[in-house]
Amino acid sequence: MKKYDSQFIYLPKIGAIQTKELKRTLYHPRHIHMHDHVEMLFITTDAECEVISNGETRRVRGPVLVIHRSGTYHGTDTLSTGPDGYASFVIFFKKKLLRELPERFAHYKTLLSDDCVIIPLTAARLEKYLPYLELMKSEAEHPDRMLFLLLSVIDMAAEDAKNESVRLNAHNGYISEVLKYLVDNYDKKLLTSEIAQKYQVSVSKLNSDFRRVTDLTIKEFSIRLRISHAADMLMNRNATISEVSYACGFSSESYFIQAFRKYTGKTPKQFTESDTKTPSHPGVST
Image (cartoon, rainbow, N blue to C red; front, top):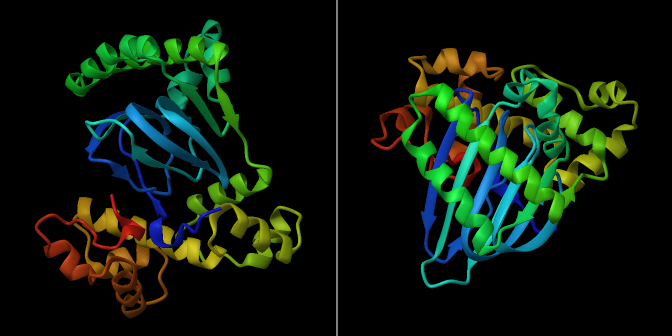
């Protein structure tokens, strides 16, 4: 497995459904991250892809649809093989939207039960999705229409997955639960020994399994998690540096400033005063 090093970030998501269109040329580097939403990544151009999900990897060829379950530690490394470069469209949504549906929509839930589902897209398959993706870009202010479009996309994906799909599930299944536990308690001081006891494994096994999946220690993962939340608070809320430091579980404001500069290349003050507010360090890039 390749080193992920500083490329991990936890990305808090706002709202029930979000979309994002990405267009880059030739190479799109891996961006290892986590969030609380299901992610449907449509790579719409020819590309060689390496999909990462909770430490498992799989090489595939685009165009392709990659679905990541909420709470997974994932990313995609892509190299365009077409003349127009790499392009993709992403849908993020809360899984609870599907839990509220009638039982006759249970096939949706089956589609999203694995850590990751990879569905190859032929030209014909991709063509049927594109009108819905285009509409989703323009309907962000209409939740009911967005939900209808989302369900239509998921319905097509569920049908395509029956014919051809690859499913990834991490061998160390409990690490997914550890990751979720760390995310849910990022502002608390958690001891590795207590986490090991909670999941009924030895400290050495926990450390080994965690590093195999994330290529990070639990301590390093936790610090990056706090920095990610701190960056989000500084960008999107009117909070002081002291308030952010306390809310994100740092023992002191000075330690927070030191850690923030280490992972972003800027002090919190420089970060908030930046015109773009875009961190320079890939560890907390958005």
